[in-house]
Length: 107
DNA sequence: GATCTGACCACCG
DNA sequence: CCGGTGGCCAGAT
Image 1 (cartoon, rainbow, N blue to C red):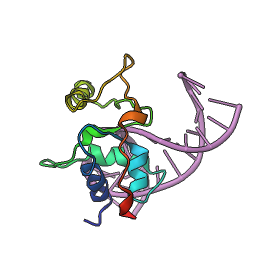
Image 2: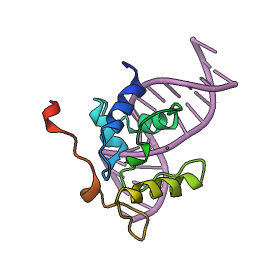
Image 3: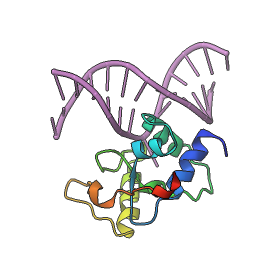
């Protein structure tokens, strides 16, 4: 598990239900600031049978990213709402309210 | 091994 | 708030 993607999955897997993280945040957590892009690519390459809550990863605006498959956006939103996360009329999440703060005792 | 592609973010204006 | 630009990495062909 020394791979790049593995680190991403590890961080995302640590995100508790009802909380969200941004791509940039995940990048910083794996020790790679400004690699937010790769986070998205990593999630797009999620292997089958994963146990990664990818739906808890949103972009910096607190909105669900659009994917190739249109229905996926609604699907992700559904999963988040099911965890108690509310969306405003613009389909966005209040980051300051739902953004997950990583454990400090990790350092 | 070169080339293309892909769930983004921060930094200017 | 909107837009353009640079930065970065792994996988598929």
